[in-house]
Image (tube, rainbow over all chains, first blue to last red; front, side):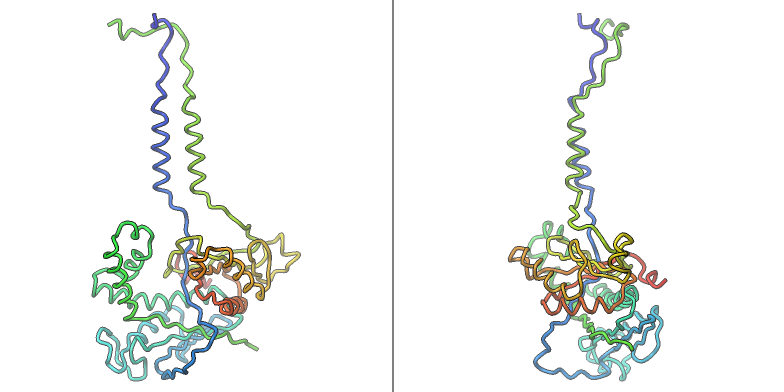
Length: 206
Length: 160
C-alpha cells in the first residue's frame, strides 16, 4: 500500500550527528588568535640600595639617535650587524671564567656572560619601529646563545624549550615531575646567559 | 523483484528541513566560541611593527592594553595628528596612564593582580618620547612587566 505514496523521505536522523561532528571539528581546530610581542621588565623606580660598581668593559652601550642611527660601543653600526656584535660581546669570556663560552677572550670586552650588561639608550624622537628592531636584535642575540647551549645540553633549542614550558597545553599533558624538570632546564639555560638589558631614561635632543 | 520496483507516480519528496535547527545551532555555537569581545574600538592608527623573537601573550585575563598612535582621520580634526594614547575608549595624556593601570588592576581578582602584563600596542610611526613617558608612568605604579606587542615578521622590514 505504501508503494503508491511516492519515494520515501530521506532519513534526516543522522544529520544532527553530522552537524555535531562538524561543530566539534571546528572547536578543536580553531585557535583563537593570541597577541605576541617582546616581553620586557622595566626597572623598578626605587634605586638599588647599594651602588654596584660595574666595569666599563662589561657594559655594551647601544644608543639610537633620532634619525635611527645606531652607536654600539662608540662605533657607528649598521642594524644588521648589531646582533653579531652583541653575541660577540656576551660570549667574549674576557677573564676565562666561563667554561661554555666560545668567544675571543678579548680583554677589552666583557668578562663573563653573567656580568655582561647591555645598555640601551634612545632619543625622544627615535621612531618606535627602529626601537623595536633594536630590541628584537638584542633579544635575538640572547636567544642565539641560549639556543646554542640548549642544543649542547638538551639537544633542542631554547626557544622550543621555553615555548613548551610556557604553553598551557603542556601543563595538562605533563605531570608535575616532568614540568619541574622542564622548568629546571629553562632556568639553567637562562642562568648561563642572563638577560641583562638595561634601559636608561631617554635623553632629549636639542 | 517487486521489492525494488520504482514508483513511477508521485512528485519528488520535499527535502527534510528537520536538521536545519541543528545546523543553525552549530553555526551559533561556532561563532560564540571563536568571537572575542572587543571592548573598545580603536580610535588610533595601529600598525604594529614586526619582530621575530617574540613570545605569545597567553591568558587574556592578565593583560592590560594601551594603544598609541595617530588619531584616525575622523578624530584627527579634533585631536590633531600627533600620536596619542588611547585608554579604553578615550584619548588620554601620559599622566593618566598610571591611574588607568591602577583602576584596571583593581578590577582584576586578587590573585591576578601581581601577575599582570601591560601590552603596549604602539603604532610604528610613534616617537619614543611618548613611550618613555608611558614607561615612566608604569614604573611609578609598579607595573613593570610590559609586552611590546608586535606582528610576527622580519624586524628589518620596519625600517622602510
